[in-house]
Image (cartoon, rainbow, N blue to C red; front, side):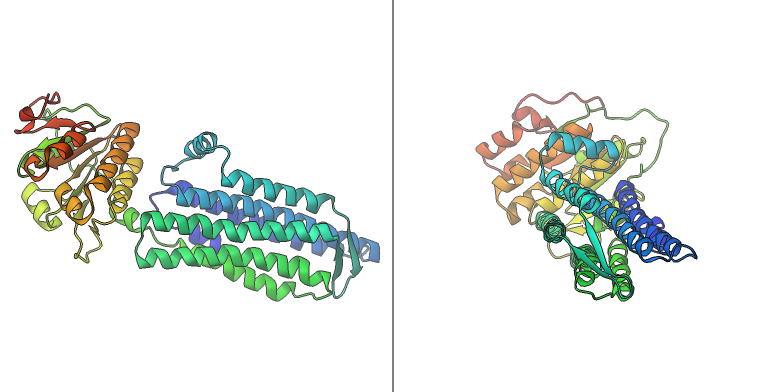
Length: 411
């Protein structure tokens, strides 16, 4: 049921879902292998004490191996879920190569050492029914250390990610459910499969129910699309056969110098009506923009501090805007983004943090071969601020000639 629930989820990040599906599949393999071995050792002719003891040890080792493989894969899910740039297997390996060594490498090392310990450590079955198993002290220590690593790693990655992205309350709640499910399952496995049998207490049956409920929490926590995935669905407004009015080089940020944003919107509309997937972030109400420019399919986010609509993004901290833009250009093809409201962002932050936002977006645009349009009223900034912005962008618009060379644009 959990696998079916995850498989049916619709998401803008399918690789994330596939990793979680693989992790849960390993858990199912652990359950199936444990059941099959238990059935085999209780068949007629297999019921002698040595055979039962060997079967119990084998089932424990196979299940524990699958459990820690599940731990390795759920760790990969955590990395994918908390790293915006990872949307495919290729991105994941690229991240691991560029960021090596990283926390996930250490995490995997601990899990692998634990698996090796499980396979080679001597285990003695003192009593069969109820099951009483004696483990070596170092076996208990290494398994406890591995579980501690998992229950610290999941909250660390998710909480740092939430601080960076500042999601809404619903996403926060679901994230904590995922953390509780992952950490609770790890503690449950240590408690019900190792510690309690070591003291002659066999509570595996109720423990199994508790552990499956905790895994169900993980599936429940990822049941919905995230805020941005739900709103930002890349889709071209139209595919007109006419020749586009404007042509711009990709991989660059363009500051459209004008006192209003009319030309920026004109350029943006020209792109999205000729097959380009676009995202509009604007100070104007989305319905007004849709009506004036005839945009029905293009996602529009309202840059507002007080608006409560789902398609509103707050101006502070600027990282919220960065998250929206970066997510869109990652999941779309040849995108164009219009960021209308630079002055508004400065009024709710400081110029330095907004300039840092432009720096980050400029790099993301360059890496993804996107186009970023920023309407820019030079009368709202001093000469130093204009000079700093000019270093990061290409200039367009009716006022551009006053501040330096204009970017090449056909019209």
